[in-house]
Length: 203
Image (tube, rainbow, N blue to C red):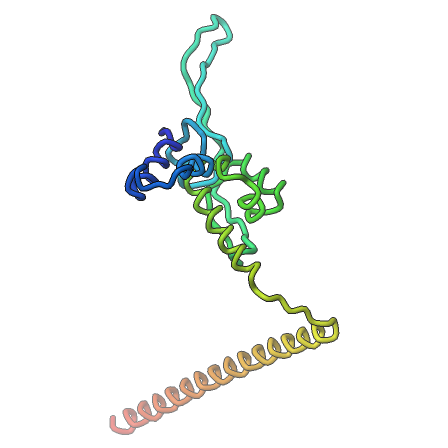
């Protein structure tokens, strides 16, 4: 358990060289970008918890109403989430509440882009959000070319032909390897038979 917002602010100021090196008004803007949560679990640094953290309370007995301290830990699952911006799966630890938020947003990309910085509430979430925004901006500058339907159909046919050619090449190579193995086996058997006949004649 740690005060993540204060610790992150201290790290930023330490990397910059202190508050003296910051421009006027820069500290207030940094506070808006840093999570505003007071207490966050230590393992929340390694996942997306969406505000769900450990909670404390009492266990009350049914008979006498005796109270004993207890805690409630969030339901954390390790999932593989597909990112269209990165074009690959991301393995990340998320809470079930975060999974519902991601489904509602429409995917991990939309969740990271739509959620503001001060609500990400973990260092990993802030890191992924900044990385996703940068990649999204770079993809927005790329030129996109649209083809008519006839050309798209031609491209699909070309890809199908390439796949068929690859399959035939693999099948031919497999058959050739099997033929070479059979030839080696037959050669070894004939030489073995000849050697056995020589031994019988010599005896």
